[in-house]
Length: 341
Length: 143
Ligand SMILES: Nc1nc2c(ncn2[C@@H]2O[C@H](COP(=O)(O)OP(=O)(O)OP(=O)(O)O)[C@@H](O)[C@H]2O)c(=O)[nH]1
Ligand SMILES: [Mg+2]
Image (cartoon, rainbow over all chains, first blue to last red; front, side):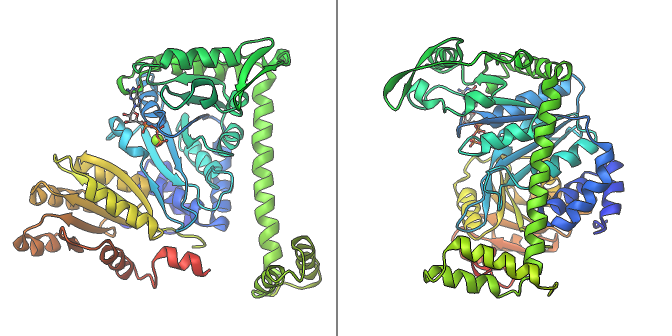
């Protein structure tokens, strides 16, 4: 049986457990904004149960291997697990090489696990544009824990903090000079630190470096080779969650039970403090912004003749108008024009 | 669909552990603008078909050097049919004796590519079979 195109049919098939229909729904929200809207409208009432875990860190630290091991632990504990593995789209070709499944083979044949590889496509943030929608679909289909893997480069980490309930930052030894290898931004977003590859030399140093950086009170860090003293603000009482630092050997599953325990503790922390509510508000605010941006942009484009953008690009290229003025002119033109298409 | 991307699964079924060729093809397909899901070596037919289903791919490229293609491919094709996925374009690359090519095609494999194949030929073949006018990377550059 080949799959039908209608979103409603796909949704009912997926809700009956048809894995291909679920997979096709994900393609639909990745490919088409208008249909994404339909899917979200239909499924939203069935969502809100899943706990969303972001796993980020430098390339090669063992994120996929850890996700694989965590999913196994969750399965033993009776949870259904959805996995979204995100890799960057090549800005040159628009193509992508998505290789995280290579490390997720232990989950094959388990109907309680659904794995999807996603490319970032147009998203500047590094997180795939449609991630939130895909999370929503998996949530609605009864996946109770959703693990999102992103490579921690640039903006992606900050983005994942807004998409996930619990953020795990994965470090590993041998990726350069300890403290300096740990990027500044990750300290603020991590709810849990994992030092993976604990079987490797240098894992203790990575662990200590993290501990030092997280230590309360004034602390000294190396920044571009200079030693600086950093003063911490006292944590707000409501945010009294101290990120644990956990060692794992993901390839052997060692220490992974403790990581899952920590995620569940953090989930409990979010539920019993205002922090959970606060994060949910941040998440929804970001999602609304994204939707508004998309909607306003396409409304603007609908009102402009197809060639007008190209004309303006030419004018800016030849320096006859600056980009701010050009944008204002486009907006002004769109506002006075009826829908042309 | 607005930004429909063509998704390709590249897999190596069977027991041989050489995936250099498969990786070269995977990279070439990425550079041609496809979204390539690479699943690595020693994949069972079940694992390949499950990944293809979850990833909702348009194309499956199988790299088989072990000589076990007449054992592996029929099984994969049967599993695809059972799941209603016989609309997925299946290609086989590797060391395939001439006399086996018609047998594979009779099973529904659309393209068979030997060791000397240029990656561009594989790209062109996929584009032709899927009815694309140019490869996705070119289409993106023109839009
Ligand atoms: N020694 C050791 N190797 C590990 C461990 N965990 C993962 N690896 C290896 O590290 C390499 C990278 O692992 P991945 O899980 O692919 O890492 P990743 O962070 O997902 O990589 P990217 O997605 O490419 O950023 C693989 O060769 C793994 O087998 C570990 O605990 N110990
Ligand atoms: Mg990975």
